[in-house]
Image 1 (spheres, rainbow, N blue to C red):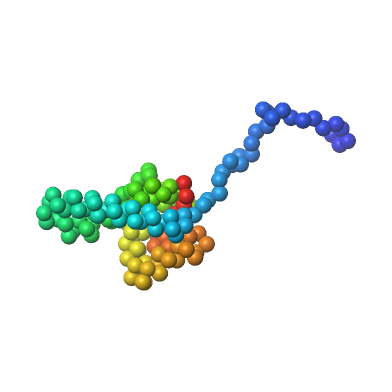
Image 2: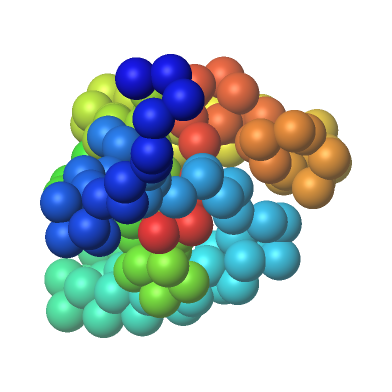
Length: 147
């Protein structure tokens, strides 16, 4: 009522606005992604090296297929991250913020070949794009975000 006395509502009965506690998206920076990649390289080398030593002949094939399967399975899993990314508290999502499929993770993995062949400029792009996306992220329509 206009001109009437205001009454305070007890804090216990105030309901927060829906989504008020949602934290803003923080994209993973170039340095964080680099450290995650170094950890993953170590994991892949140790894993593929051990399997290769045990099988005596599958080494060459494993060093090509292993990294792809490792990355695609891990990124499309509930973790949404490889061991290195998980260690750095970052995850890979689609543009919609949801978990990516094995097919999208595969496309992202092989798009890294293009990022590499362009004198690694595709990776360096992550330091300069608004959403900190590398070329392979743009091509696969993915984001790398802090958890």
